[in-house]
Image (tube, rainbow, N blue to C red; front, top):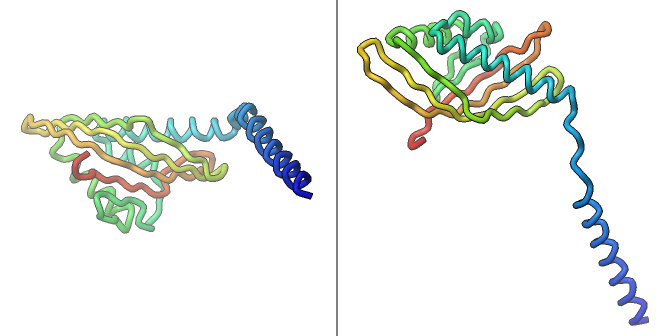
Length: 165
């Protein structure tokens, strides 16, 4: 009976080892073309948003944001409850800036569904003020995009400039 138990344990261990070896040797699945297309479309929309911001064009920037009054933008702990409130804050922020260079480094996209995706990343903003001073800040961002009427638009954005970044 002892030999039978030992053989059974050895057989089970061998099966586990073989299963691990087979799964380690199995190549990862190829990326889903639909997911890759969504990721690319969201990245392109985000790039257009950044271009609008870098042009200091708040209206063009907000053209990529859904028309909603559900607290769609949060910045450094402040929630703008309406789209108009957020737009007015961005316009005030752009007022004293002569030049803006904003970029997101290594954005990561998570496709939630064919109509919803999340972009996260860190980036850098260099703002040249009207008086010539230059301010550089790191930021972190999480953006939820929704496809509506065939276009990807921002559903909710959370921007922060963490201390020590």
